[in-house]
Length: 322
Image (cartoon, helix red, strand yellow):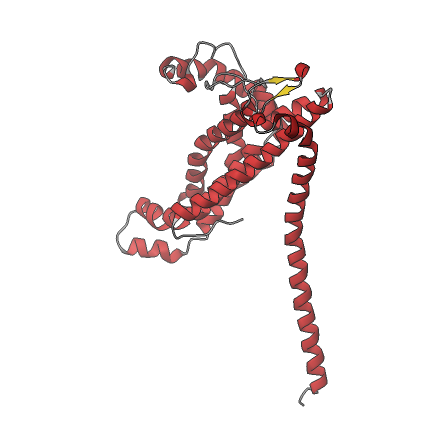
C-alpha cells in the first residue's frame, strides 16, 4: 500500500529538523573553540594592560628583568622559546619521519605493534616525569659525554662557543633535547597515519615501473604525503613552544640573552611558571601576564607562517590532518 502523503510529509519534516539541528550543533561546537581562544587572549590582554602602557613595544626588545626597579623585558624569553623549539625540531623531525616510514613501509607485523605501543607510551608520560629523568639522568650524561667533544670540535661556532660548557649542567641544548623527546611521539604518530592514508595504487604503480623500495618510499609515498607530514611537524612545534615543566627543570632559568647553547636560558612558559609565586607588585604580575600574551602571539604567528609556507612550497599532496 502507498504511504499516506501526510505521513511522508511528517517524516521529511522530521528528517530536515534533524539535519538542521545537527548542523547548528556542530557549528556551535566549532565556534566554541574560537570563543575560548578569544576569551583567553582577552583575559591575558586585560592583565597585561599596565605593563603595555608603561613599556609599550620596548617590552619585546628589552633584555632587562629587574623586579626591584620594576623594569621588565621579554627578549631573553622569546629567544629561549624559539631557539629551544628549533633545536627540538632539528632533532625530532628526522627521527620521527624515519620511524613513521619504518613502521608503515618496512617493519614486519610482529614488530610493528610493539613499537607503536612504546611510541604511544612515550607520549603518555607526564612532562614532570620526563623533567626528573632529564635533570638526574640525561643532563649529567650530556655534561660528561656530549658537551666536551662539541665544545672541543665546534667551539669556533658561536652556538658552541665558550669555555663554560663544563661548568653548567642545565642549558639551552638540554632543553632542546628534552623537547625533542616530547615531540617525537606526536610527530611520529601523526606522520604514520598520514603515510597509511597514501593509496596502495601509488606504491603498486611505482613498483610496476621498476622502482626500488627506497624509490617507492621517496617518490610515491613521502612525496604524496609531504603536506600531512608538514602538518605533523607543526603539531610537534606547538608542543615544544608551550611546554613548561620539563623545560623548567633542565634549561637553567636565567633571564639572559646568550648565543651559546651551553649557557643557561629561559623560555616564556618556564619563566612564568617559576616567577608567578614570586611576584610582589601589580606591575610584576602584569609583566608576567604580558609574557603569556607574547607566548600566545608567538604560537599564533608560527602557525600562520607555517600555513603560508605550506601553501607556497608544499605543492599537491595529502592535506594536513588537523
